[in-house]
Length: 421
Image 1 (cartoon, helix red, strand yellow):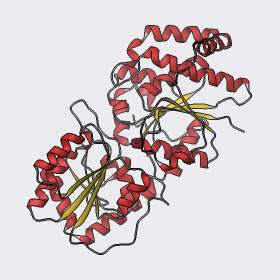
Image 2: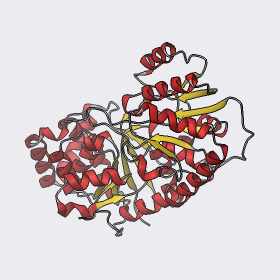
Image 3: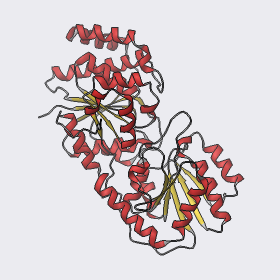
């Protein structure tokens, strides 16, 4: 029987990273034994209900431990593989810049976390249940920890790069992380193109696009509802700049001025909430726009079921931050909702304008308004795009298929590489 796969994340569980939980559950359904290591606790109050279904134990690397335990962990590694231990320390001391860019932990801090993981790896090997692989989510701190665990223990690793963790670390740091990895996974072709343009050509065979999937049975279409005089619009996302909610509020103000009747519900929270609430009020949208804060999957599902249209208008920020393929768009399309979005990041890989949704250029408020108005006025088009969106998700965004591909990578079985050079 294969040993466990270690999954390494920055924080667990994160409401905005439901795709990680879904991936873990899909892997467990396939019979993959997992051990989860989280660098920190999320500290969030709202938790997705499916977190309780995860069977894997979770260890938190930032939790306090006694100095005796720390010393014993270092001695264990020094005794088991003295040359690896010494070389890893030398590597970290020579390369403090590996934590530059988007990061919350120094290179030395990542080594401290790696030692704790490596000690468990060593113990599992001694107990007759050696881990077969380590997979890190996000290319910044978690993947640096994975690299150092690999150097300490020889355990092969892979990582998934998502958004700012990919584009906001130095190219040289990404190259170091990728050079020793068994595979580099990303969630959309736009990210893959960035990786191909950034890394040497000999790294391309390691690159794979695996879309974040959704549970198709849970996120499913509902029977068509009668046309309502007041349309229900919905969006979900963190209230941060790259989500483009300020542009969306401006577009909604234009819709109201043109005589459209709607209610817009926004699920999510974040640092821009006070500014967005102030903007809503200044635009005269207090009756139409409602900020409902963070909600779990079941609440979001109920909102999607009661909505006529899903809208998300992401942008690329001045510092390069952007979405890959927002999972909430995939979930809305899985539910058969027509969607309006922008062409930022990896969105055009999911939404084909005029075929399974409508797109505007990022930041183009007038075009966002026009596309929403087009759908509000055309029930037939809404249903047509909703059906096409569901078909797209069924074909390309099934979480079980994504888990199957990841399981192949964990076991060292070849996938067709994404690299096109």
